[in-house]
Length: 344
Image (cartoon, rainbow, N blue to C red; front, side, top):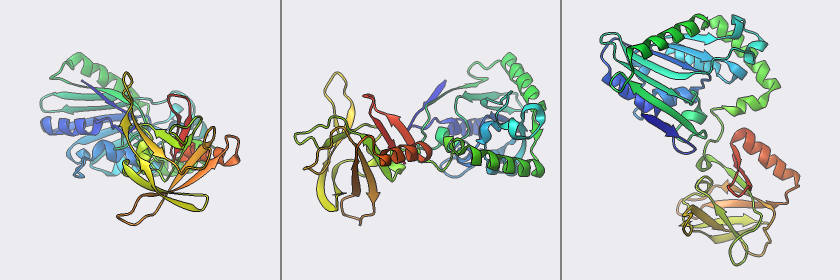
């Protein structure tokens, strides 16, 4: 069977693994390999909604990659310290130095293979998703797809033999995770990320992954809609930034507080039938061909959600600051019509 995920819709790999652990006979062993690992990704893959971690029920072996230093040292410690686990790290040429963070061969797999030593029953999850927050959290940013197979659904003895052979080869090429290795990798990675800070943001567990989590949102306006040309239409991707998404909000603009600004989700006319959320900005200003920026402000319970509005021209320095902030701490993208937007 296929499993899929995208921004706001997590791929359900963790749930499938929990089901397999419950369904597979005793003496279970798990072999899992991922190119990248972060603590947020581990929690999403291994813990269910009740906080139960399937690693406590199995013997596990892990192979993790360190390309670009994206894998977090704390994630490696987490894997090694939970349950009956054996962790190795694939280091190109086996030598842990700066070149190991970018040279080939890279470990690029994303796979979990669970097997019962009592019956031989096996269960395979293979996908595009790394063990990171942006791929696996409840509100991910990545589009992911994978397949789930078992001996009940066509996984053959030949398939298992092929996996075993591949695993043993990669395992033998990998280095054992030790305290000394972790110290060396931590120092090496810190130097690498100081020189290349954008890499850390690429898979950071701390980045904003969904518009509902963001404190700030900006978008290129081009032509506005509405009779007063003060209506900005938000898509399904961006509308969760507006708390409540329906009713009225307060917008502070130019030092003036505007209450009762309408928020009215609707579906566009056929044949497109798209879900959009028009937000009515304060009248009396020409918003066309500019950038608008909304920042969430604190508000008392029972009152309208409150935002501060800033408007800037495309070439203004502050627009570049918004764009860079979204790219490093959140999401920067373009609408279907080509307008830039971002949130962080």
